Image 1 (tube, one colour):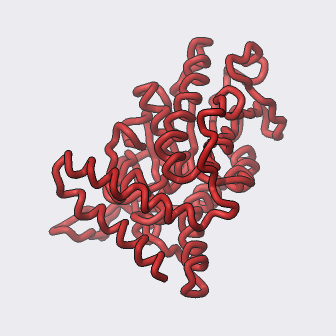
Image 2 (image 1 turned 45 degrees about the vertical axis):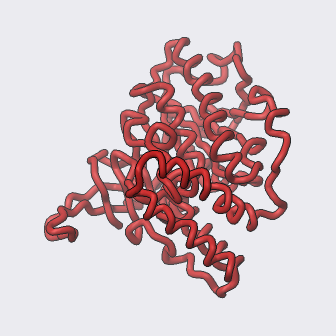
Length: 330
C-alpha cells in the first residue's frame, strides 16, 4: 500500500506543475519522471530491460508485417523493401496497428486483427512490432523508444509516398504508447496522414506528472482526423487536456471502468484493475467495428461549468464516426 500511496503522490505533483513557470516545469519533469517510471517498472514480470538499447538496430529490431486481403496472409516488409508494390495493394487504403509498452504476447493485435479485417473491407492492414524496444523500462521506452519507432514508421510512409501512395489514405491505430508513436509519426508528415485512432494513449511521462507538450506527444493536429478514446485518465492513460479532434470518454474517461473493479486491496490487484481499464479502450474500439453495434457518445454544451445534455449532439465511436469535433461522453 505504501507503494500505491507514493505512486498517487507522484501523479498529484502534475496538478501543481501545471501552474508553474516553464523553467520550473522542466525541473519538475526531471525530478518526477524517474520515481514514477520506477514505480511502473515494479509490476513488470520479468523485469524490464535496462541495458542494450544502443546495440539494437531499428532496421532489424522493428518488424512490419502486412496483408492486402481479408484473409490474414501476412508478409514482412523489410527496411527499404524493393518489393513493396507486390506486398501492398496501392489502390486500397492502408491501416497500421501499433501496440503499447511491454506487450510481449501482442495481445492488442490478437484482439483487433480479425474483427478489423472482417468489418473494414478492402484495406491493406499492417502490424508494427516494436517489442524489442518496448521491453525496456518505462522511462527509456517513453523517452527513447517512442520517438525512434516513430522515426522508423515515418521512413516507411515517406518511402510509400514517393511511390505515389496517398498518405491521406493511411490510418494509424495506436494503443497506449502506440498512440504517441502514431502522433509523433504524424508530426513528421505534418497534415498528410489521414486518420489516427488513439486508444487510451499513455499518460505517465506524457501528461503527468508534467505535460510534456504537443510537440512531444499525440496532438489533434497530427493527422487530418484524430479520434481518442479515454478509459483511464490521469493514471495509466492521458490526463489534463483532451488531445484529439474528437474525444470519446466512457465514465468520463476515468478508472475504474465497469468490468475492472479490483478484487482486493493489494498492489497487484489494484495494478491489474488499472491495466484492465487502460485496455478497455481496445475492447470498445473492437466492439465498435461491427456496424450493427453502434457505441454512441453525446456532446453536451457546458453552462456555468456543468454539462447540460437536454439536446446533445451524438456520434459513433470508432471507424463509423461522422467526425464531429468535440468531447463525447458515453
